[in-house]
Image 1 (cartoon, rainbow, N blue to C red):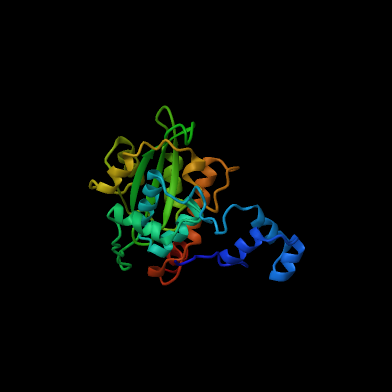
Image 2: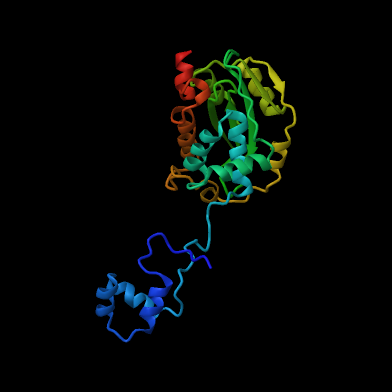
Amino acid sequence: MEIKLHSNATTTPRTRKYIQSSEKSDSELAEELNISVDTVRRWRKRDDCYDKSHRPNTIHRALSHQQEAMLVFLRVRLSLSLDELLEAAQLLVQQGISRASISRTLQNWQQSRLTKPDLKQPVGHLRLDVFPLPEIISHKHGSLMVFSDPVSGFIAVALRERGDAQPLDALVGFLQQGLLLQVRSLTARSTELTQQLAQQLQVPLHQATPEEWLERAASGGWEQSLEQLLNGERFDKRLGFGAVLLEFEDLLNHRIIRNRLKNLTPAAWLKAC
C-alpha cells in the first residue's frame, strides 16, 4: 500500500506506532529517534499514526456569479489576455484566485477566445455600459457608467446619483477635457441618458447590439455587498465606493501592462501615440 507522508514529516507510520507503544520517556525516545520531544508527545496523544489532510475545510477562492461577470466584462471590453486578467482579478476581485479558475470561468461564459483589436484603428470610439446599482452597493448612487476604448483598453468610470435627472455638464466636461483621448463616438443602448450625452458631446451614438454574456451577467441579482464583490489585494474597505472605483480605474490604466500594446499600459500607450 502506498503511504503518503507530509513533505516535512520527520517520522513514518512505523516510527509513530513504536512511539505510541514504547515505555520509554519522551526525552529518551526523542534522543533515540533524533526528533524533538514535542514530536514524540504529539504522536503519543494521537490514536492513529497517519498524517491528517492539510487541505483547508473551506476554500474561499471560488468566484460568485457577480465576480465572474466582472471578470468577463474586463476580458471583453479591455481585451485582457489570460495572464493580464489574472493580475487584474487578484488585485481587484479575488486575491489568491488561480489562472485555471479564471480559464474555466471564461470557458463557461464562452469567452475563452480573444480577438485582439487592430492598433491601427483610431482611438476614441468609446463603448458605454450603464449598470444599475443595488442599494446594498451604494445608497447614494443609482447607476455606474463605464466608458471603454476597445483599441487601447483605456477605461473611465462615472457614477450617477439616485432620484431626479441630473445635469450632464460635469460628466461632459470630464469626457472632453479629462481623458487621454478625444471622444469620437459612443456605442451604447439607446436611452434618454445616452442620447442626451451624445448630443452634448456632439458625437454620433451607435446602437449597441445585444450580447449574450451581458444578458447572463444581468440575471445574477447582484445582491452581494461591496466587500463580498471586491476581495482583491488592493481593496480598501475604508474608502468610499467612488474612491474604490477611481483606485481600480488607475490600476487598469496605469499599472497592468498589456502585451498587445508593446508591453505598455493603456495610459502610456496613448501618450506615446
